[in-house]
Length: 154
Image (tube, rainbow, N blue to C red):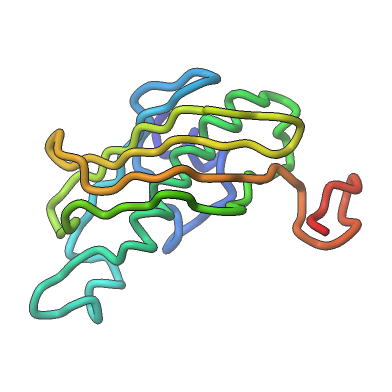
């Protein structure tokens, strides 16, 4: 998937669209990447003398890649819905992600029951693991209680 297909699949937009390309996908796994550049706005303050991508944004990028997998899995059922992050288990950061790195994420669907699922995600730079964890997600059209289609969070 190129960036145009990604933007048709995800609702994220600049500055929070953190996936540049999906290189492979199926309904049970996906691989995609974010090119990390010094032009990212967060590097102005994190940290100017030693720029490091914030861990929470590494997780966000990895979660967006996993969201593409969920969208592919659900197909037309996904239309108008978002895979919202509901939890992160066993998150570990192995090394910093810096400007010039390509953060490659591999996500594997480990469970999907109804609108709740879990994915194992691993982030790599140059084939070295930089972060990993298990993401719990909920597929809904809104997080508002009693939202559209009655699928909001409670």
